[in-house]
Amino acid sequence: MALFKKRPEGKPGEWYYCLKHGTVEEGPECRAADRLGPYDTREEASHAMETARERNEEWRTDPRWNDDADAGGEGPKAG
Image 1 (cartoon, helix red, strand yellow):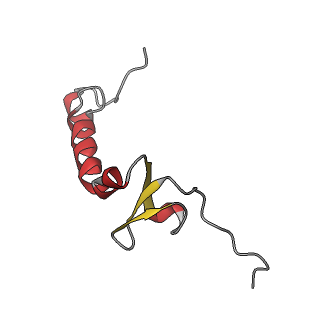
Image 2 (cartoon, one colour; image 1 turned 60 degrees about the horizontal axis):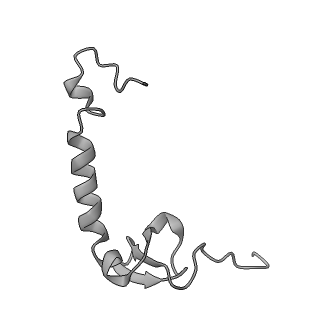
Image 3 (tube, one colour; image 1 turned 180 degrees about the vertical axis):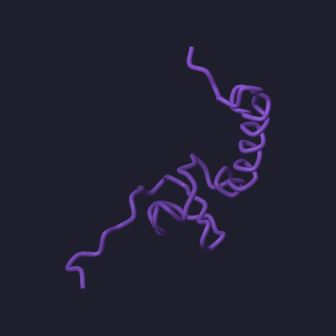
């Protein structure tokens, strides 16, 4: 048994969306692996899943990162 319980990182005034509980939380409540954030406001955190879906779609269709569009299959080029 651990002598000290490690607190999740974060601080009051930062807002997170907890993936495990499906709730918005302020500061460090759930472990970092189970949350998205930090967000500046409760409102932003409440839209975390929508924001993540939008960003995933943007990245999925971005020609700089879309391997399907690259005939050589080499992925993005540095430069």
